[in-house]
Length: 212
Image (tube, rainbow, N blue to C red):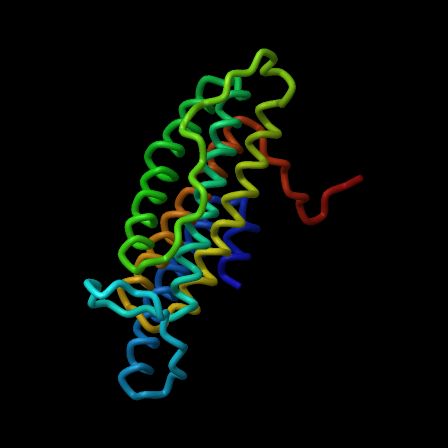
């Protein structure tokens, strides 16, 4: 519910900031509840992932193994798509934003997730090509449309992170990874809203009482 409220609050930045603060409190509360329920033995125990290498002392359940794999596969697709977005973008500010997101967020998260998969003996998804494609006609796609596709992708990532956070109950450290990914993605979403409003690339929400 809170994530939907953040997504819908694109007009008033202070209201969106309020919802973001509530989300961060709720995430911490959820994490504490999971730890408490585990301590009491009131949580059902998911099946353990059976292919953990002998040198790894940590345990994860099958759901957590899937979420780690799913996140890396998702990030790999994000990397390849963002490389295409960068190739077609024309606005200088937008290209800087795309490049920073590619290098400082997507690739770093993919590297972190790949390390976790290797640690737990989880097969790796296919890596994306590490190259910006060359295009002859950059006007095939418009910057505002590219931006909105990026924005929708970030919204999808928020849901994926939140679902993994809710379902990861066995390994507290892995749950923290998903918690950090969620908060980071919400912050990215907020920055994109501000950027999109500045550029005029976000469709304005209808106001109550707007005359026709």
